[in-house]
Length: 225
Image (cartoon, rainbow, N blue to C red; front, side, top):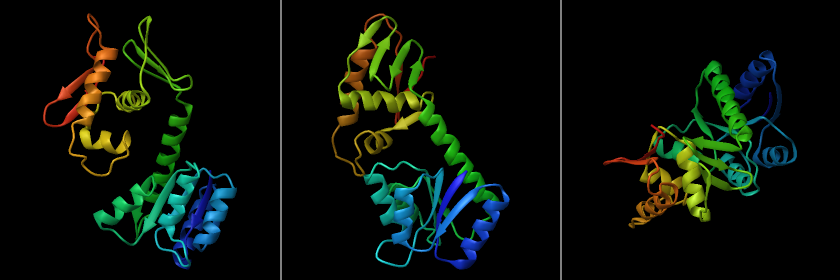
């Protein structure tokens, strides 16, 4: 595993670098936002450990936002002494994949890195999604149910993909608004319900088993059972 550590605290960085190298990993370490952005954008890493507060004109969240805007999807673990719920939300919404507060145990940091990399590898390897006889090809963006083709609009495709990736789990309207529409506020409309209704009409025609269930008071669940 090749990791980039962007951390200005000498004691923390020495602790993390030593532990990762002892665990057999390769690590690059920089101490400020400018160098962090340069290394992250120009090198290939399996994961990035990003300090939330850094010296200079760009902090950790600024680096993350810039990388995500550039299309860089490297898993990022945010380190921060700021432990409030609001600060964790800011870190995740900026594009961080996980958030670990200081002080921390090295074993937990390593476990979180391993989990991030496993998740990323699974997502990268997945080109086909299936729930019952409903199939989605992520490369060709084709959807079929049994022998018939299902034609979806781009937003319907995104909605179905999210539901299929979370098969067997309840997904709330808020989760759908954030992950499918990129809304981080309540639009005060029934946009989710309308799109779910339209999607059902396309993937559940007469005689076919319903796949998308309404979970009253919670949201929706896709299941083949």
